[in-house]
Image (tube, rainbow, N blue to C red; front, side, top):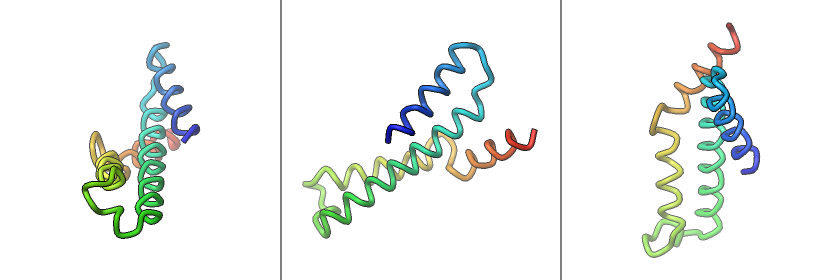
Length: 88
């Protein structure tokens, strides 16, 4: 989780300093969304069947984590951006 935070801070720093932050932002988004999904999946597993019941916050965390992989560019699209940046 700390690595996700640091990647986001690096992308923000690059943007603030007028440095091309396309690749850093893509890396931050992929890593943070994958980390969120991993953490939410683990939480659902720990809660068992209750992890899918709306009365528990874990259910919402799972939905929110999943949408981060899709919203503002899927993880696959972000990986393409990263690979193009590496191949430059």
